[in-house]
Image 1 (cartoon, helix red, strand yellow):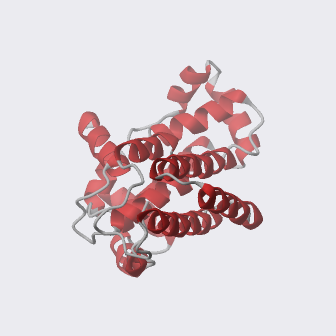
Image 2 (image 1 turned 60 degrees about the vertical axis):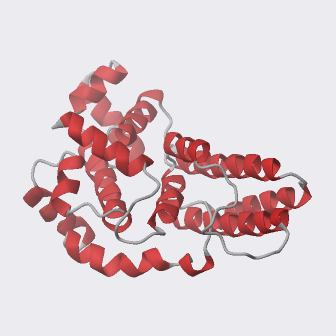
Length: 255
């Protein structure tokens, strides 16, 4: 099942279209990738979906170049909001948005707008990625955190991380908790649940499929721990948050 889980997890982090739930989910999923600091997924998206005018874009100007600039501004505003929700300092996020909007206002070629979009997305993503390691002082703990984020679709153990860092498991556990404030197992569980929440909102995977993809021991355990930490069952969480995926869709924001 490990290979199947790997493929399913990659599909969730890389696919950009084809969701049954709503046609705008890929846009919001992309913002969620930036918010989570997923550099590889964001690069993959930007390379495979360059920022160019598409049929689904609204016509905000008769001038093609100006229309791209307007949509770029919408995207910058959405990124600023999502990253603020993810913990980025409000003044930093808005200053970054203003910077790129001012820069794109000066360009005269569509290719330059596409290049600016790529830089802006990576800039926000890198800042979000660095946030999660901001308080981390040691290289081993930073290594562990990167490994955990990259392998949420597998069963991760302290032994795995000890081999990665070449440290004694007990010593690694102590410094990890000292620097993060939580145990390794709690941190892994927390990140899996955050990913599960995103999958419930931005994909059509069932709770059983999500439990399998994220390598929980069983669906019942996943449901139990999800309810304990989040406060509701996975299905109820999905139903409660369906409306949140509709934010901004009517504006036709590009990504």
